[in-house]
Each structure stands twice: as structure tokens, then as C-alpha cells.
Length: 102
Image 1 (tube, one colour):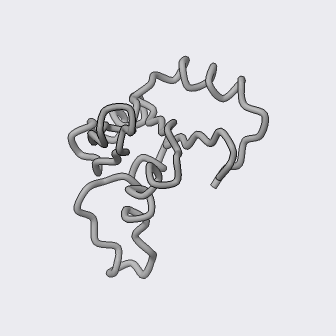
Image 2 (image 1 turned 135 degrees about the horizontal axis):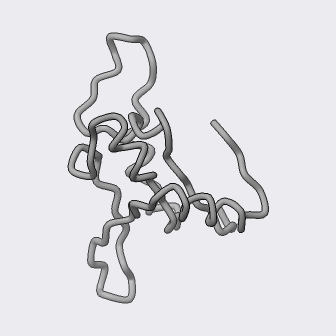
């Protein structure tokens, strides 16, 4: 992207990261493969709001695995998702130059 991009999943947006979902029955695209590729596009900041997961009866084990290859460690796969609380996510968002909401 040639930008310092961060992606945050909060509120019902956390459902986008559910592992094993099949969206064919509701006629919408499943973006799981696209999210798994974020690391390939050098996105290193993927945040998931902890309270949003808890309010929906979910935890990190329910989510797809998003990783990147750490070139500093011979291509070792590293997890990309960082769970943050609401206060921390608010702080992160306040430090951004541009925020796009989808």
C-alpha cells in the first residue's frame, strides 16, 4: 500500500473474522481469504476489539488466523491480529491521520 495501514474490527465487524463461515446462503461475499492476505500486502496492524468479541460470545479462538512472514526471522509465520480493549483502540484511532469506516 506504500502507507502505514491499520485495520480494526469492532462491533459486529468482528463477525467478518469468524473461522469456517459459509456466506453462500445469504448471498454475500466471504472476505476471509482477503483478510488472510493482509500480511502479504505489508499490513502489520490488525486490531480486534476484545469487548466486541465478548459481547458476541466469541474469543480469539473463534477467529481466522491472519499471519505474515517475518523476514527478520527467516520467514517465520507470525500472528498479525492484536486483541485490544476499547480504551486502547480509541487511543490508536485518535492517532490516525485518516479513518475509513466500512
